[in-house]
Image 1 (cartoon, rainbow, N blue to C red):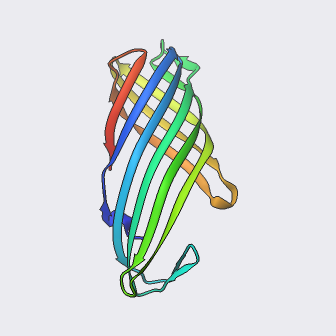
Image 2 (cartoon, rainbow, N blue to C red):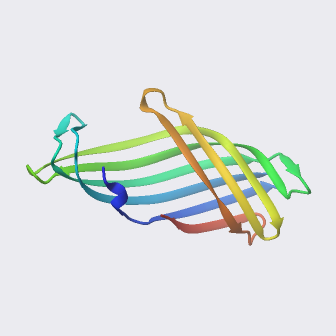
Image 3 (cartoon, one colour):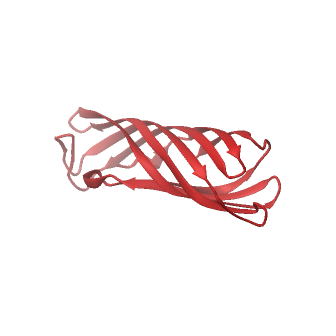
Length: 171
């Protein structure tokens, strides 16, 4: 719908509580605000409203995404330098999607709210303390609605051993 053309930054807040050397409970919250405009070269039907091809469509997506995950990295090699294990959680979002056809001056708005269970895998490599290289992926098949997938990877600096707070932006 042209959302990538004018994407806004997405602030993220992460709170984690480490129970022991291999288990952490984590809460993440991300606010996403996307705006885009595009001339459609095909028909779009959104919430039973037709947006015909050749029309200029302005799209707005406002979404709050929250996930609560429990990472259990019981496979540990090299005194914890390499950690691997499952993650289970629940992921939810509150979304508002608006399509506006500026050619004939009408719009359609829909709230898309849902929460789904998620399972996945988490891996960490700590080559040198406090450096941490991580890869995580989780999701769930939602039947007729499709698939929910959440994945991330990167490098972080670990300051506190038991409690951590991470803030950042997704682009």
